[in-house]
Amino acid sequence: MKKIKQKTRSGVAKRFKITATGKVLRRSQNMRHRRRIKSKKAIRAYRVPVEVKGVWSRKVKRMMGLA
Image (cartoon, rainbow, N blue to C red; front, side, top):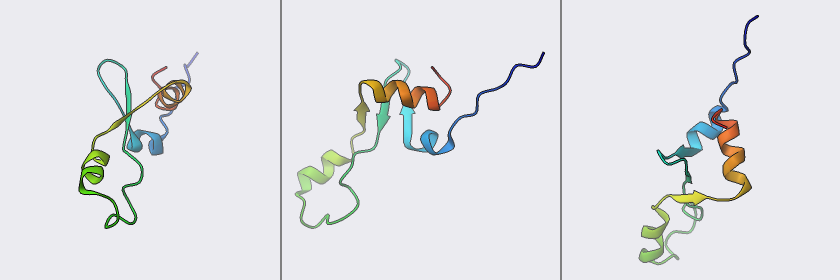
C-alpha cells in the first residue's frame, strides 16, 4: 500500500520559519503603513523576528508538515 504524503501549505511556509531548536518565527506586524509617524526605534524593532507561542506554534508546525 502507498503511504499518503502530507502537503506543506505554501502560504505558511513563506510566512514562518522554524529554528533548529523548534521555535516558530514570524515577521513583526505594524511595518507596512504610516511609517513616518512611528519612531525610528520602533521601526528598527519591527525588523526583528518574533516568536510564535502557545497553540499557534503547534498549528503552524502541523501546517508545515513537521508535527
